[in-house]
Length: 330
Image 1 (cartoon, rainbow, N blue to C red):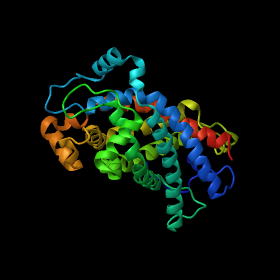
Image 2 (image 1 turned 90 degrees about the horizontal axis):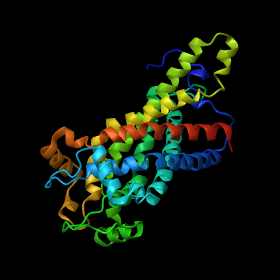
Image 3 (image 1 turned 180 degrees about the vertical axis):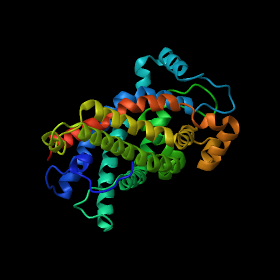
Image 4 (image 1 turned 180 degrees about the horizontal axis):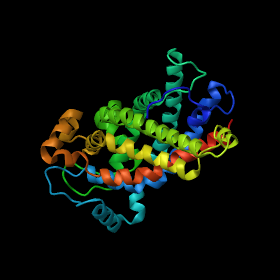
């Protein structure tokens, strides 16, 4: 949606300041409220994420173990029970808090950078094009924080050995110890390029889609308002919960679908056995091997269930974060 003319505050409510705050207090809000929202979202999506990683990480040289998401759910539940789908959630909970708080923190820093460029004055609301950019800005910086956390998570979700035996489920500490022993500190950033592509592109879509749909709803509500009083109220009132949920859900679905191949390659790199031959492959080599073996379908293995679980997860993340910022300002 193009942004033309003079925008009212009602057309872009998420940028409406409640009151002037110091940079420190804004940062505290971003980190604290982003952490809470991320943890809520992770509890909702984690079983689906476990299935997604297991589908993505099936080896090329063996017949596929799972025929699809439902079969993976069934086999996983039969082998480990419902709690098995939450295996290793401690690291992802920390990761979700770190990721979501980093995203909201760096997205605000991105907005400040756009204003500092002098291209837009601070008395104007940023257009959607600038908000897609601030999303990419946030994702690029967050990828550095997120890669080590996701590496530990993936290795717990999909235990692997070099000899093909059935491994003992690892713990967070055992994974950290093993990676550091064989690869040192740099080993924790294996798959960084894939995380960078996924986060920078995906977060542009995450924030951009949410803001685009939010603006569409505010314009629709403004158009349907029956009086000037109702129109004026839109400048301070939040959207109805169902509209907030739709905006958040669209963000999650856009994020996961558009850059899913980068996540698939990243997961395969991070779940390869420590010390195995796969440890020497680069992002491009891993992607080429997967393309040659399974084509485009292989790059999107597990995409359906990922997009499905991202809708409620992202909806809750934005609803929780925006509500905390609106009703519990510091």
